[in-house]
View 1 (cartoon, helix red, strand yellow):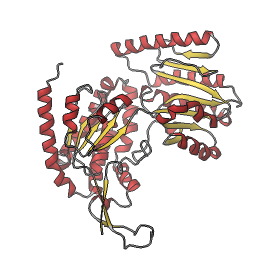
View 2: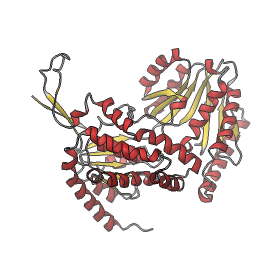
View 3: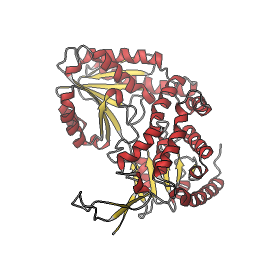
View 4: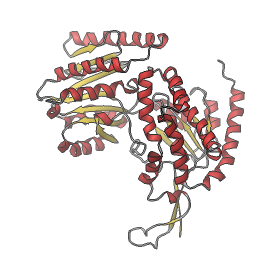
Length: 445
């Protein structure tokens, strides 16, 4: 379908005018009340009998290239963050009181927490927020809308190509539930390479939020005026770490956790481990652990099959065959060993030494053995700048010391492997509170 840029430009202009008119009404609404409405709408996606959930599950697999089985798991995991409890927690986790978003609140004097003689303060969201989202993980667009509306920011959102369904459905359901809040949202999609439309969209915005690759973030950054707040969620990746002490009685459970974290979202996004670092010296060898992970991926493939639409599956299969062929060259040299599912899209590469391997499509995992997990940040080197999540399987006594180590190296989220896939809505995204990133503070003395 050919894009009619003139029509799209006109549509953006009209949408922004409507958003501008919507702000005065939502500014008068208590933030706690807005959170409640958003949560009521979000809970519909978890209700098995709700037509909204049924429609989402009908449309989501084809758009996000997920099997129906995995699409349901993904929707359930994402929708846990869209409930009334979750939206309320978002507010209380970042603000001492949600009243700070409703008007001036007397604050303690700086330097003296017991004194109430300080200035009054208020948190103010953007008059217009433009969110340019990514399509790699469905549901990110809904998260973005919830964040904006909690700080009372009328929002124009361009969802990613694989995330238009949930974003649009949430916006439509919100408009049905609450006319005022619905009027504060506009969902528009255009290809990322249409820079004229992107420039038009961000014109006049107070804040622009971008999710995507380093290249796409850099492109949008160049279009944003210096007076506009720019919030970037650029390329990030995740890793897993397994301590030698866990390679014993419960090792099959650990392997299953690894496999599920790899399979979730078809291994897309910063909450999936791209590399797993396993300490040598456990009750079983790293090579045997790799075999357990491979067996777990085979089992998960039966429970959560991959998307089977021919054009998508054929393209991925071709890329996977090519990547496996390259790995086989290293395998012949003795530097790696590989296990894979044949026509199934899982691959496990166990590396005896650091080698240059091509990106492995699908549910693929590189496993590297290390003498000590404390060596991992130095092995990652400069790539730590892009490190987001670290999923761990270690004893409790090691969590804090490893958390400090990886946190100082660049990671912002260190969690058990089985909690890696679905961060809570109040997580410190890229190391910052997602609501506080959107607001500015006002003080009156």
